[in-house]
Amino acid sequence: MEKYQKICVGAFIHRDGKILILRRSQKETFLPGYWDIPGGKINFGESTEEALKRECREEISMDIEGTFIPCSNFSYVSDNGHRHNVDIQFLIAAPEKIDDLRLTDHDEYKWIGENELGSHFGISEEMGKALKKGFEMIKLLKL
Image 1 (cartoon, one colour):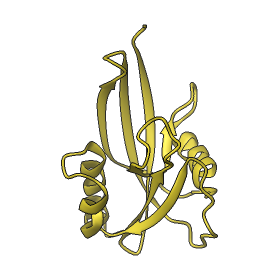
Image 2 (cartoon, helix red, strand yellow):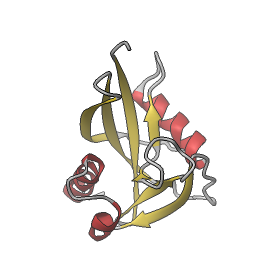
Image 3 (cartoon, helix red, strand yellow):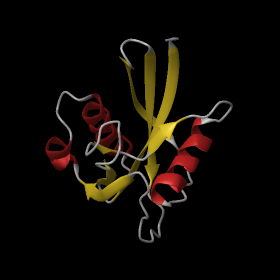
Image 4 (cartoon, one colour):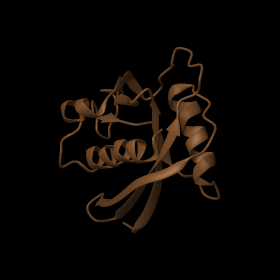
């Protein structure tokens, strides 16, 4: 099997001191039932902003706009050492008006505060660490 890289983006969508998280469907083959944020793979030739907008439309039927602030990143190797994944998360303010979110690859969503991270993300998990950085950025930038 050939080695390759996969670059992904995540939308750390926030409002009123909370962030939007999604639970992956139990039908998913990769990390079923795992809590996540909207996002996914960047297509060839696509910018990070284009990928974030597309993924949010596809996954939660939300059109996102405004300033996308990089807040964290992590990488890991999977597929028995054949795939190198790079994930970049961006702070994005939630739109003023949010209609009911329609989920595609997920079966539940929640708005959670920083004090609820531990009940959804393990303290040592990369996504949990990334989300903690996102909350720190919100405080630092007074968003």
